[in-house]
Image (tube, rainbow, N blue to C red; front, side, top):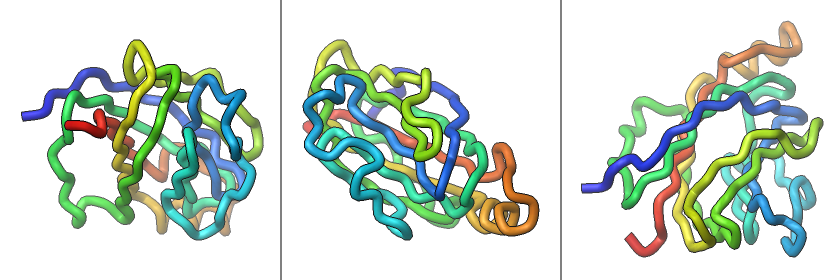
Amino acid sequence: MAELVRQQHLDADVGYHAFGFQESDDGDLPVPFPDDFEQEVFLNAFPGRLDIYSAGHTHTASVTVEVWDGQPPVQGPADWDEQAEAAFESTSGEVAVWSMSLGRADDVITLADSGGSWRVRVSCTGRAAAAALSEDEGTGEGVEKYLVQFWPAKS
């Protein structure tokens, strides 16, 4: 049975419906964030990069990132508004958080001591509330909540 290795909570600045995770050592990425960001695609993977489409235009999302030693238990789809999985390659073992409006954040997630191949599952709740808040008031904090789970691809 897979075990949780580490957990990290962070606030992601969402701008233009977007935030993402990108290889921390991003100098050689063929498509750096936010190039080619696709609206309406909940989770979109590029080499060394994961784009997340938020239901809210401008707000602060609450994000919990988990790193597991194997595939974590599947979360029930009834608990989430959206869920998706993708592959992720890291050369450094560290992932940076990016915002469409502010660029690279100070937050860094450590996956491992070195690079490797990973799977990631992104789950989200609060999407309708975030969209409504964006239309009515413009911004909000912690209404949209994400669970981002990384685990080694070979597990």
